[in-house]
Image 1 (cartoon, rainbow, N blue to C red):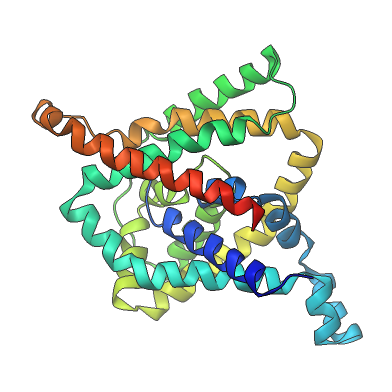
Image 2 (image 1 turned 180 degrees about the vertical axis):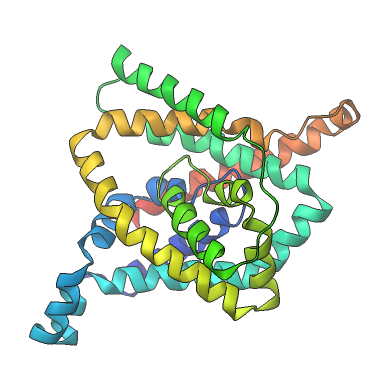
Length: 279
């Protein structure tokens, strides 16, 4: 039975996940993993389905609510929603005015997250190292794909939400970057900033559909191929790091110290989030 402190901790973890999902190159799944709620999140979502509706009518709201761990999802959703509402304008502004410092911050976050996930791999053998290399190659190819033009059709936004949320569930795979490739990131961020409820609703419907469809498969894969799955995801994180690399121009070399400080700040926050495993 969770108390107030535990529920507040889950809301805080949801807030951290939402913040990460707002930024291309960072995965909310990574935050869920390093804060110790990843497996509960996947299992809870995977258990939802037609039987949930059946039990709602058969056993009542209170019993169904407890049986399917809805309190956990609600607390997490509150945290994610707060991050979107509070930080979407700020992050949108930082991406326009200080993109390199923002990327440096998240570069440190991802670098510090990688060993935390790797330590959960049971057997660190050549086979799992090979799966990690496969993840590096796949991420490098995926993140090098040309991006599509922005498309604001609600149906397309819903489709993009379904695909993007699948990536957001995976540690190391940035759902925001997938949205950029699909041409849906800018319309979604603009909708959040401008409260365009049509686009927001379309995106939410797509996300819910993708969650319910993908979580069952992901749960099965993790249960049956735990070490191999985590190895691939660590590889994904390493292979996608170039997206966050701030020093792409010679003129920026003079700002190395500034970038390094932001990266250290990101790494420090990951260390603090790791401590939240105990909350």
